[in-house]
Image (tube, rainbow, N blue to C red; front, side):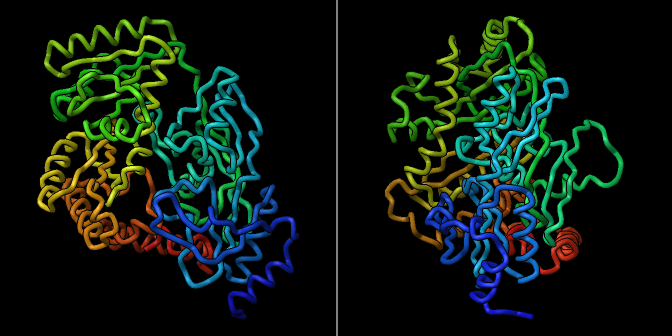
Length: 467
């Protein structure tokens, strides 16, 4: 039987322990970039997987939309319901325990609500490394990282979140619990449903616990900012470093002149690594589990790159504090962008060999619109570029027609270069039309069939990911 939305919520309140309910405060009504807003909702804060299962089971019976909520840092609107019903927003912040860590197995078992930085600091006490590193590490949660298959600065060496996960516990749309907390590096028995859940953005179930890989903490790290003549040189430098360092490359980040200018202009950093800001630079970091004089080796190979005219200048971190300062600058670029105020933000990926072509075409097309500035930075080592567009005069900030035009320009360029308009942020609500336009009919039909089979009442994060 169908009930009006308010009546459904009243029935849900009757069935659940009052202690599970919390205030649906302002933080749950919008997302960081302010593109999606929710007017109504009820907030539930379960403490156990059993709590989550009970909530989801009743919501399924009553056909109440369920919106999983992690740290709220998602940038594509996946955590904000915009439909006509009153949703049940399930915040996982109380499921935050680190259950177990094994240095022998190089594994950690962690609940979905655990803050990423807390997990990193915890495993570091055992001289281990959890390598996922993104700008929102102080507030994002492991469950959200898994649900969006988060990327970050270390993908070049360790892979995306998907590559760091061995097993999951998931509450399915009918309230049943799939316990697959596998601690095996090799297991070909049956279908790998774990990888169906990772990146599904809460549309197929709610991740409650995960078994994640950890790694020996590097005993040596070497970090440098290297200015390069142009983007082609940056790509050639990446290849040159691969030939010399192989798997020791932990990060290879592209930073534009505009990025340096923005962090300086907003007062987020007092001093830049270069006296004269270069047009392009890369932040490179190497890591080794052995003592091999990595810093000296980085200086030596950079000197060879200088003789090949692949770099123009270099600044090397000579202390741990300087290394952290280098990374602090890089991680403050998104905050600087936010303070300046972008008209349009783009999280794209193209084959590494086509990055220069993308930037060349995009810059030319944006220039035709007049009065706009692009800030290009990101993870050049894995082909992921953040290309954000600004009107520094502020006149066009709320121009929806211009925003749409810019997004269409970038989408068309990315498609022509066989790339993706969402490299690491996910699909959410923001990119749903781009998904529909960039995938073939069979792909889209398969997504719908999976969703329809697993969630026939369409309660799990409706409007997200599934076109």
